[in-house]
Amino acid sequence: MTAASPPEVLRAPLVVEFPFTRSLGPVQSAFLTGLREGVVLGVKTSDGKVMVPPVEYDPVTAEEIRELVEVAATGTVTTWAWNDRPRPQQPLDTPFAWVLVKLDGADTALLHALDAPGPDAVRTGMRVRIRWAAERTGAITDIACFEPYDGPAGGAAVPHDGSFAGAVTGIVAEARLDYVYSPGRAQTAYIEALSERRTVGERCPSCHKVYVPPRGACPTCGVATTDRVEVGPAGTVTTFCIVNIKAKNLDIEVPYVYAHIALDGAGLALHGRIGGIPYDQVRMGLRVEPVWTEGGRYPDHYRPTGEPDADYDAYKELI
Image (tube, rainbow, N blue to C red; front, side, top):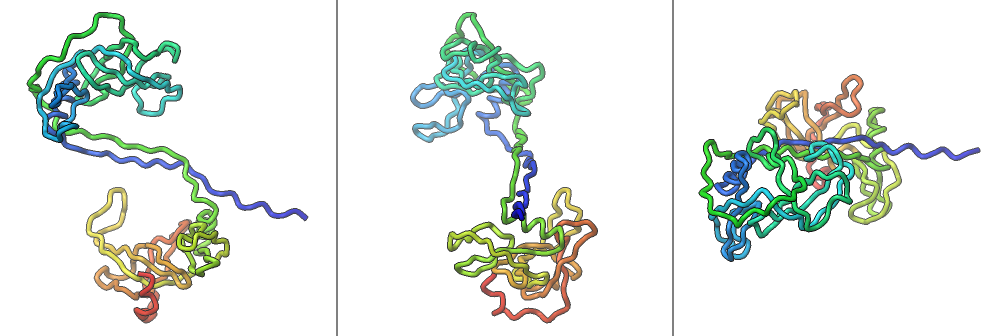
């Protein structure tokens, strides 16, 4: 007789992405607009140093600084690291070096990509120049990358008023994170039970609290939770909020209610949407039960059971 193998822990690719929109102050606006025009601007600090990229407040005195200067499109690599597996949306789709480049006329270095045939072609102290993008919009990507350069050095920084026609006043940065997510042993069992329309938590052997969803360990006692306990399906609304703003890509009419629900037998509340009752009739202590859709792997929402409201003392510790 052989022992049954443990269930496979779930794993799935997950992508988190959103556009981050920000406005630009006068210094950053001039810098990005300058890139669009093929001009690199820095800012002069109180001690006479030229910072590229520019900042709006002096790193020594914290005073606002506005003295813009133009620096050269050529410079020197101060340090570097080879990237042999470029990720999506990085500057180049072939292996390249990340480099810090101190442009001629600047006292600080700018981080960007260097197009080189291999790591043997990169070294600290090598001379490089900007390769401008074919189409420029007023973003750091207007610098397509750096490339090796053996021409003359640029001169010292020269004053610039930062004025350009059609200045860039805001940017949208696309943030994206790709990774493989695993819920772990405890939540894998929880998710698989939900597919059978059951809610399973785990009990702490020390304090006996039943965690739903389970976490694999008790955060209070610090011990593993391996004793599985089926809870619910009914529960009690402990607290709630009324949602009045419609979420993008969510086909639910507002207003609706989102609540914390303490399932019978659970030691803490989980959250879910309340349906089957006008939003202004939802209340603390309301007894509810899950509603499943055809083929759904988790409750679509919770509705009233018709039972009398729970006494406050029965759920006050779960608020």
